[in-house]
Image (tube, rainbow, N blue to C red):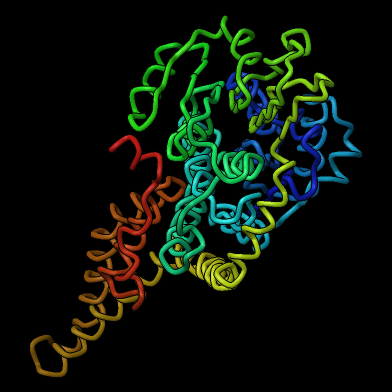
Length: 436
């Protein structure tokens, strides 16, 4: 078994290509999962799709055939040539794949180092895959350790102190444009999801009044109700054209698979407008108007680079944590083999019964001539006693709960001196989420 990950991110793929790779339709995503899993070498898959990256995380029998199948199916789905995908995507195998996953989860590979949204996005991707049986034990255990690693990075460094996101960087850019103060202005928020909510709250903290526009008016109202510090109004999506031609600031962050603000909606106005598009695929079509400045995700590099420099020292500490967590993960995997554990338990039972039998003969409790017959009875007895537990252990071997069961057995029979520290450390994130 191997771990294999294909990564497309802001580091290796332009926003134009990332738009084509983004999975914004859940049914399309599920069908793509099925096509990947139809290949005989691919066992489990988790697909992470955000505004800055698409990660295809897999457990496979063989890497090269699996990789070729992934690129072939991704090309067929997106229309991007297989050659271009192979040239852009970063490929990670085994240790490299786990190290990359831990790095992504710890937000060290994000456009904005230290942003806190990525863990929630990974969890959401994992839950969808697990719930639909696209992944199981092998990737579930990697996810758990990724979340543990991310938590340790947050707790051991200041890399996520005063957490920022792409939305907060967009608001910071707006402040910079307006001389550091945007209090008293009004801004349009298009969308009511996580990124739109973050933008709304950062704008409200800056004293900006908000107009929230969303197709789901109830969701928009819920977001509006959560903000009390400024004036917030909610408008139906049908009023988008009217409002975008009325105000200077607009922040758009929907999950639409296509642009929602098009050239034909834009009117010539005599004041300058600044529109921030933090969606992938992009929400705003380039209208070619001189007095409209459109900032997409990749246009916020200056503030992002400043963020990287400020957090560089903490990143060094974080990478050392990730390196150790990667090594610990593979050491931990080696302790989980069930067959050697069963063999060790049987061997200890045999040694114990043999020792007590020899002690009984030595002290005269048992005649020497009966030793062989009693030895045979004892061995049959403990084999019979261990038959049920052995069968149960083998039956549970491929389920996500096997890891905790194995660690418990190791602790009970003292098979691993470090295992007490790890008991209950493995819990499937899906089960935690659903309170199973």
